Length: 226
Image 1 (tube, rainbow, N blue to C red):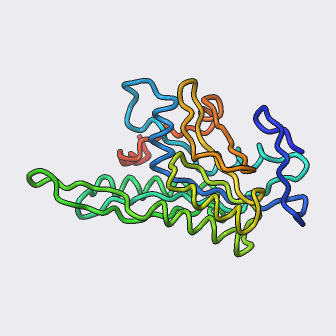
Image 2: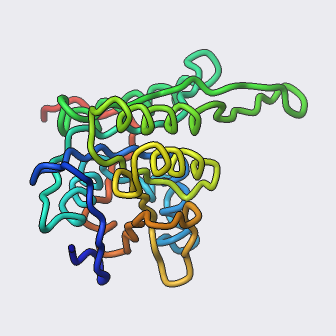
């Protein structure tokens, strides 16, 4: 039994050692936009909503544990990557941000960048959209648990399209092998729909403040010197 975020959790992974191997899978664009909706007043700069995936994952891994300590073994960040041809600034910013993520723990942090799809919009405009990012994340989370690379997969998203991944892990292994996580504000309660027996981490404004990233990756760093 474990006290987590104001509630008791009775999740047990059969045959697990004291240190459960935890892998966290983050639906980046969904998490970023949802952080803005949950915590950001109108008029916040565009960079508001950025956070450190590694520090979020540490928070989740440590917060869930008491009787059995969670050992963080993998952090995957799934997001779309703008085309260098059609959006040079966006492409450079995303790659710079991904490098910053990985620098926090090169062994465990894995950015999974999937090229954005482009279609014609009004006039000469191009409209970019993510395609397959949620499927890529779902397959990675299910595969991690089924292959035995991790004991527990934590999926951070508010997208109901990831519900089948949660249900698949629960059905093929058990509810103790998967958890979900989401932001929680005074008026923001969106999350992956509840699944019986599966615990959800609600991450509040105070926790977000501890992992927030205020860097603006769209602006190249100035060279050091006088």
